[in-house]
Length: 441
Image 1 (cartoon, rainbow, N blue to C red):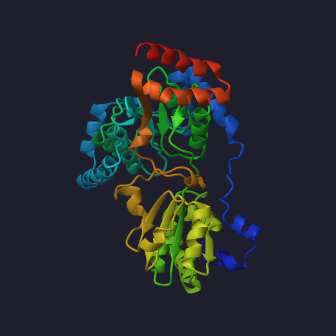
Image 2 (image 1 turned 120 degrees about the vertical axis):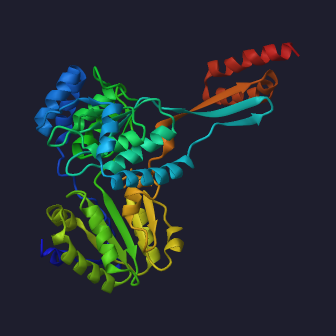
Image 3 (image 1 turned 60 degrees about the vertical axis):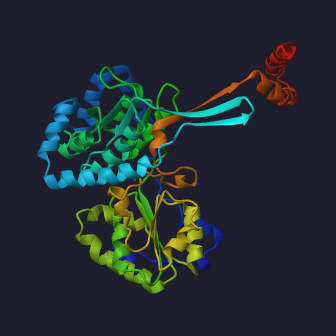
């Protein structure tokens, strides 16, 4: 690990051929390319075996047997009472900010008269039940509970379900349960991995079949989400996902230690995470690499960082506008702009999951407590997907009603378009009504 700085090199963008530039922006290749059939087998087991299969798979894959399969409001309340007051206050503080931001984004019912007597309406309906997957592993992801459950409740979903894997003691960490209680989650099930996604998508004897499955996870969870979303009998999912990533744009005025910690905070997520620095200052790039070499070995995830930083990119650009153009091509999950005119530069951003502007806005704020959601498109999906929001927990339905006079005004347009498309029945559905409407006048 101590030699990591020697492995990192600065690449001058202007010196690269187009093919080399494209290769430089490629994400790391998944290390589990043959995962599909294994996940499909897990899904089949859960669909056919229900709760029994889920229990066996948890014991087989997580190597632990849950002490309790389902936890309700009583257990969540007990968990809340068991956590440190400082943590409870932090959860409530984050909840208020996340709630305030998402409440401002609640879709509203609208009605538009597109012609005299022709009323067209947009109505939003909450999905229910919704399944929230909260990863376990090395740390309880309390923040993910908040980011998923708060918009679900603001959308007025009738039933909000959580699945989270058991820790080594066979229990869901109390911090997860406490956050779930504060956010008004209805039911919590102790199950993780691809098997939990299958249970949420298809249902078991105890876990309700959910309309949509939300939340991050490892390669197994991601593959399971993709498979159930492609099955008409499965469930919708929030968005495609991949390893975590951050791209930082910085100039010579930026603090190298700020940038180093920003890069490390994403690189520590996993060995497949990717971090990039784009700068117009070679001196800054060298300073950041030196900081990484000093700081990374002393962290509690040094082994992970050794692998993920091997895929780090340090790109020297001619100017900061070029840096934004490169960022737009890469479409990062997180984009940090740490420059003297950061807000001006941010106006040029087109493709990014979430943007952090200026030296005092670390990505960590967005992960935990500033307000916007931290469930974001990765792996370049920011070109077509956005951050999770309240509308993701709802479906949009349109309604329309025409008066007789409105049909007489608009109907001929429908007749003409139906004729050019060769759809006779479409045209006749209008024609017979127009005939009667004219006879009645």
